[in-house]
Length: 181
Length: 251
Image (tube, rainbow over all chains, first blue to last red; front, side, top):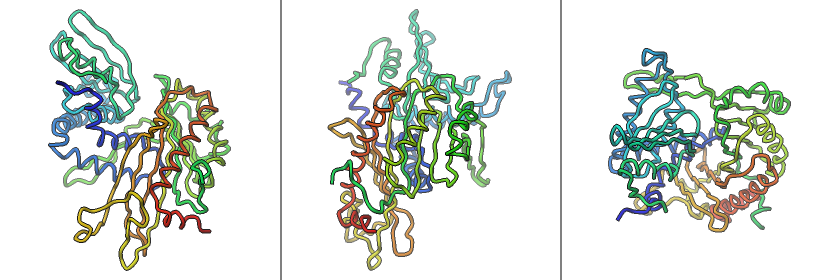
């Protein structure tokens, strides 16, 4: 039986919480920077572990590769903006915040410097999320003849449960297998 | 002494930070607020600095390269003595107070003034998180070249084999929820390099309320800040031992 989502989240909270801590650091003192650097080392150490972070490590590498490839303006020959660093960081944090075992997306650069995270089951069943420089996530989905779109907030720590359930629903052909506790 | 009035004579505070994380209007570019914010805050915070997004790229056998992409992710308004900073960030507002620190009560009117300017200029739609964070630097004296962590911390670091191992570095972090209020606490203890006969330990202690609130309702925001202060004071008192606390009660 699938675990309730709240249980899944509680299992992966450790490093995700640390990441949220790093992300929300607004301190200006050298001591604040020192703590943030220490936290980054712990996160890096975790992300180097295949057991702790295996599939996500590969996804983050893909994301880094995409950001490198599309870093300069006009990367598409049509005047697209280079991938924005904040969008890249937000996309990284989103991947880190996904529950373990949750399907990982494909990545694509968008002409406005944002990054698209796509879960594609087929041409007619897909979920596309646009990660930009702010904490607002615009998304659109297609499920046969049904379609929809919306905007949700991402705090850098927790992926909104309704977003997870919508993605899961598309990937499971309309059947929700993760229960939202 | 209750947690609300808990006050040390010489607190080891290096920096106090109040963060108010908000939903901002979708198309707001924080850098467009610079001129208007200078007019509002310039008297108290004459030094203005844009915080740019940047990253270091390090490749094998090459010097690290700093890449600035040009985007402004925040504006910092600094007091002339650099001890107090107001930040207008892409995700919210911050007030930073560096040592010497007096008391939160003394800073609240200044926080209110800066926050009011932020609300006026950035028009946040709603507040999502209020976070009160205190970064403390605690100097632990070496005795015969050793430090007994238990003498200073109630929940300090331990090694697995006290006889066979000597601790040379640590970063202890935990996050917890207060069962009465639902507020979250985040605690980090980490050691810095020894200085003279002391080991500096940073105790990063924060309390946060993850609740949506109206940006214009300063009375409610203030109440929340006061409640968070009580919580972070409780964490502080229950992290340090009486022996350690007493060192900061002396003149």
